[in-house]
Amino acid sequence: MNSQTASALLEIDSLSCGYNNQVVVKALNMHLNQGDIGCLLGPSGCGKTTTLRAIAGFEPAAAGSIKLAGTIISRKGFTLAPEKRRIGMVFQDYALFPHLSVEQNVAFGIRNHPCVNKITAEMLDLVNLGHLSKRYPHELSGGQQQRVALARALAPEPQLLLLDEPFSNLDTELRRRLSQEVRDILKLRGTSAIMVTHDQEEAFAMSDLIGVFNQGNLEQWDSPFNLYHEPYSPFVASFIGQGYFIRGHMLTHDSVQTELGVISGNRAYPWSPGSAVDVLLRPDDIIDSPHSPLKARVIGKTFLGASTLYRLELPTGSHLEALFTSHIDHVIDEMVGIEVAADHLVAFVAPSTVAAHSSIKKTSAL
Ligand SMILES: Nc1ncnc2c1ncn2[C@@H]1O[C@H](COP(=O)(O)OP(=O)(O)OP(=O)(O)O)[C@@H](O)[C@H]1O
Image (cartoon, rainbow, N blue to C red; front, side, top):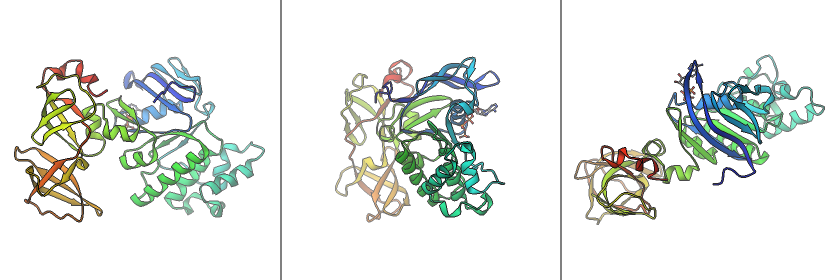
């Protein structure tokens, strides 16, 4: 991805910010192109909301800069006021005005616009709420309130929309439907957005790009596909999706000897043959293979409907997870034949080896 192209809408360069002289977000670099939807993911307290607030103009930059459409909106000593940024916001708790009707809420940010009624009606149509325009927020469901909040945020045609955990007050099914609906609406209008969420599934469904934060550092800003299949760091590998690491030794620059046999990929690593590495295996990398000489013991299973997630133990005591179609029904303690189907190799230098403490670790998977 070339993030420096002319269509870059949001450019965050070496941004640091925090509270009371304590740096929370550290030297953040992140670029978003016009029309893209980005998502910030990471454990609680890692700095996602602080980043969003800095983009909105509520937190000043201690170092670095934020540019929107080529213009600096934040840098040390300068913070363009939030209302001058043309950035819309949607919050977790909807933040609707309780004393205003649905249509008055949507019209609020454009009340001086000559076409206020026309735009309000269009926005309500867009979020499928035209028939509820006279109601008040307390007369709506959570999902409907969030649609009103979205319509209100989109009405002034923001250059960028920020969504702070917008669906977290809704139940799982509604969340899934609404996140898809919101993505469709944003794509239809070509609106760029950045969302904070705790929910990986939601991030995968909504976003073109996802940033994984770890203690104030952005570890990877990439497509959902790359985060899952090409994680840059063990942290990203463990945070995104499921999977286990198994220990192995480099055979060549693109193959590793493990207790499951030789696992190879098309990516060359710089470590010399014999180096100890941890290989990432996702549940979908392991296939059920009754006649395989490789056996594992079933130590747990979770029925997921179309598939079943098995927890397996190898003869050495290492653990794995495997996703088999739910037509296959193994029982706990059964020895099952398995094969590795991975045609790619994701490996990291094993901790506590010399290489793990050298600069190789940082560039290992880049
Ligand atoms: N107003 C504040 N004053 C001082 N420290 C704050 C303030 N707001 C947040 N922090 C601290 O900054 C760090 C990052 O907080 P932030 O809200 O950005 O995290 P987050 O990743 O959004 O977390 P969560 O997922 O729990 O919402 C935390 O350690 C938090 O305690």
